[in-house]
Image (cartoon, rainbow, N blue to C red; front, side):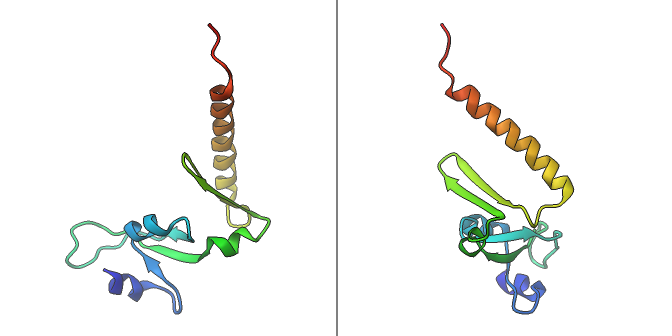
Length: 108
């Protein structure tokens, strides 16, 4: 599968399977490409195109990256489109509300 994924990568680029991306997602930034069919594999495979290392991207002020138990946050302000901005705002508001509710002591 790796050879097949590499054959669709841009020159000098890297494509990963989802399974590999899941193992290294705290190290690299990658975006999903359109699913592809591969000979000998019964399901479609979603390749992920590596865009860079998170350590390098985290040095830019437009990138917010935080990973801990129960927290997986990555936001690249330059890369997100308008639809993504609205979705991110909504989800971040929901997250803030959930954290606020969680931190309030229960009333008895």
